[in-house]
View 1 (cartoon, rainbow, N blue to C red):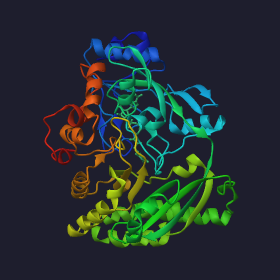
View 2: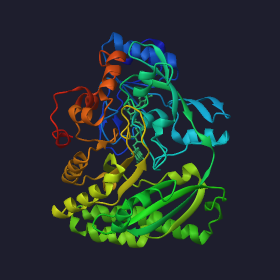
View 3: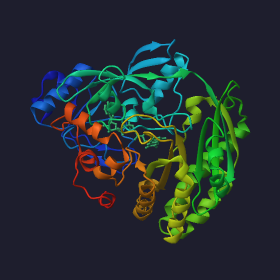
View 4: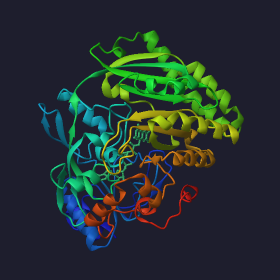
Length: 470
Ligand SMILES: Cc1cc2nc3c(=O)[nH]c(=O)nc-3n(C[C@H](O)[C@H](O)[C@H](O)COP(=O)(O)OP(=O)(O)OC[C@H]3O[C@@H](n4cnc5c(N)ncnc54)[C@H](O)[C@@H]3O)c2cc1C
């Protein structure tokens, strides 16, 4: 379809020859047209155009999903221009925003109103809609995934209607839409629960990994927010803990010498030199264990103690592009899973990158949330792509996924994984409820794409055969 054939309003938001690439540049697509609506009415017009011309729509946020979840060759839609604050209720600590707002902007808007999100993942580059569509998460035994913040939302569905939902209004749609994978419609607005703004005091220290595994429950509950980074090929790990505090921020009183030392360790050695060394290990993978031990000894075992606004403490530098895989299991099963993963890596003589990231999420009742009905431990594995170069990862992923499957694991929706509809139906008690709602609001599959066909709607795919094809 050509842009010139559209009405003036649609022409003003249509773009030809757009190539979408996700953040890690591991997935890409060329949509027929990209639309960047600025109003809900324009969103409706795009949906009506898709309906008339029998096209599919995929909406993307900031393209951070490490999979083809946000890809299509039909109409791609991005609502970054719909990023305004709509209203604030300071008594209730709630905020209503347009769903194209980035988390970065949300933090600013919340701070202006003396509020903050209760929990957050590693970055804030994502759009609010994108984060919620995949039940993205931070860490904290008593904190749910970010979709648990949603109080109500508004979406444009495949029939071009603007639909509101909450626990009271269209409750089934609401339970499905809080983690929708973008397959129910285009979410345009949300009201979120926040809390009064707060600072976090974070303390990061090295530990012996076997000791942490032996004291698992105590570790999980050792602070409000706890994460563990294990360094494969070593018995070392780092535990990061943070708690709410009234103490003043520390980062601003750093001396120049401290700042220069920190820069040297974190940016020069931890980023630039590390990337160069990792690139060399593509030709000498046997060096990876020594490089891991070196980086742990020189950079990551250094104790860190900082206090700052919550979102600055929650967020991290995720370094350079990477392949990632991350599944959710019951948190009690994590020590056994991690021991099996270590045994698999060593048995197959794999040389893998650090860290294995371990985080904790409270259970919730959102139909497709990986933390549905169980206290959850996310275990994330990573293989960096230094300077965007490929590295072998499929054997690592295969062993990792097989172990996670044995323990009833549920993959992070944003990340490429090998679960079929049959597998997912077994692990999500409300999976069929989700499919029913999807069928009702989108009977002709306007919001489907390859990812959603492969994992969600196609009952024919065989277990364990997907990942090898990605
Ligand atoms: C460096 C990095 C760090 C990360 N850290 C974490 C982390 O700490 N914790 C975690 O859980 N995840 C993490 N992620 C994953 C990330 O949070 C998810 O991939 C998230 O979905 C990305 O949001 P996005 O705005 O980029 O959405 P996209 O990747 O663009 O899209 C994701 C999904 O959202 C849907 N969507 C987007 N906008 C809308 C809309 N308006 N209406 C309906 N559906 C919509 C899309 O259709 C798609 O299905 C990380 C990813 C990267 C690359």
